[in-house]
Every structure is written in structure tokens, then in C-alpha cells.
Length: 252
Image (cartoon, rainbow, N blue to C red; front, side):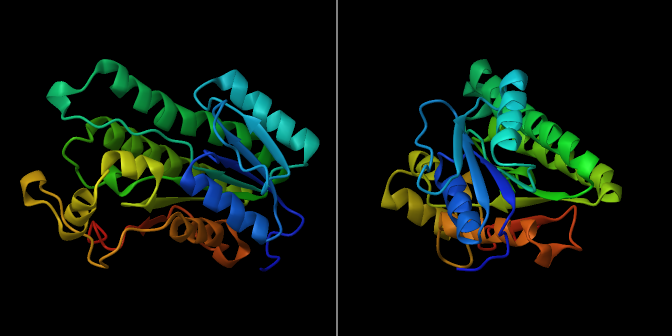
């Protein structure tokens, strides 16, 4: 337990998911007043958050209403952890157009709308920090993951451009890129121990390297990285893509 976020307001999107909930827990343990958001019907961590509110991050009006509600009820947002995202898996020749569009709408458009809404308000105060959850698939090709990887690549470049724009205003912006992490999304993608073992040792038939550290990450591993980059301990770090993938992409 520490107090490095004491007196600060942190918004966590995607807080109904495993990584988002772990981020909310880590920030709350650090003293932050956490606002947690996810789609309507998702199990928001009300035990950790000072405010919970559903939001479709691909809906511009809903995003603006969310940010207004957080700042009205908790105060100015000091930190944003944007963890909302979706995964659709299929080889490109079999990929449905709706799955492509859904990844782009939630992952790419959602990141744009949320970061724009929050940083518009941060800009006037000339302070704040944000971390967006990317993916190591944004830079390493993955068979069967074209829609997800392309949407995350768009996220990475948008966030890096945003970081350049915000730096003169005293606002820091970074990425955390998980690899295989023990989440509901990962378990749907790799439901059996055989699937998980293949991830760890690699799969030459799918041109996939293994995980050198020999374990699949826990959501808390990602959350700790997010908390560090949001904190004042990382005050001189911007534009950074912190890989939390056990070496799976050889830091490429």
C-alpha cells in the first residue's frame, strides 16, 4: 500500500475486464479516486471505484458524457488508463467484415475518442498523464489476428502522435503493450492447457515465437507497468511502448 496517487482522480476504461480491473485495483491501492467504466452490463469493480459508469467508447456522445460525469462528481481527471478493447480472431480470407469493423470501431476509434475527450480537458490545466493499453501484436505479425493487430497498430501511432502534441503542455502519454496474459479474452483464444503450452513454447506452423520467460502474464503484471508510467516516477518518459510480454517479440 502506498499513497503516490493520493488526492488524484484516475479514469480506467475497460474496467470490467481482467486487465482493467487490475489497473483500477492498483491505482486505488495507491490512493487514487478511481472512476471505472466499461460497456453497459459489464461487471464494473464497484468495490474499488469511487464512481462507476457504463460507456461505449466508440460513441462520441457517450464518451463526452462519461468525462463530464467524472469531472463533475470526482474532480479534474489527473490520470487516464485506457484499457477498453476487443479481439476478433480469424485468418484474413475467412474474416467477416463486421469483425474487422468492430475491432476498428472499438480499438482504434474508441482510443481516439477517449484520449481526445480527456486531453482536451487536461490541456487547459497543463498537467496529467495517460497510458493506453496496446498490444505486442501491433508490431509483430500474428496469423489469424489481422483485424486486431491492424487496429492496435492504428492505436499505437495515434497515441505516439498524441504524445508529441501533448508534451509541450506538460501532459505525458505512453503505451503498455501486453502479450499473452491470463484474461477472459486470452482464455477464449486459447481455452486449453495444450493451447497455453503452445503459446509458451512457440508454434512454427503459425510463425509464432514462444515466451522466453516461460509463463503467461497475470493482469497485475500489466497493471503495475501502467501505474509506473502514470506516476511521477516516470515524469521524464513519453512516447514509450512498454512491452509486457515475457520477451515474446524479442523487443522488436
